[in-house]
Amino acid sequence: LRGGDPWWAAVDVLMWPEGMEEDMKKAGVWDDEFGDRQQEIVFIGQGLDKEKVTRDMDLCLLTEAEMQGERGEDGAWKGMS
Image (tube, rainbow, N blue to C red; front, side):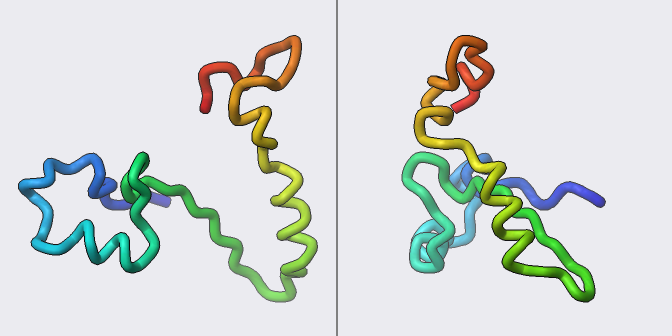
């Protein structure tokens, strides 16, 4: 396990190859606020139940209220969005 290359959004624009931002926008991997920053998780294995893995992972997603730091009394998500 190792880290990947740095996000282009964290690299000085003068160091980017010509047309990089436009190429990423066309490919759908560029966001005006976050640039190309994203996280991915990949499951590889024989006999995986894709629907079950998807359901289980969907249960881990935060709601919009949680993303806005409105989790409740404990304030567990405050400052994380």
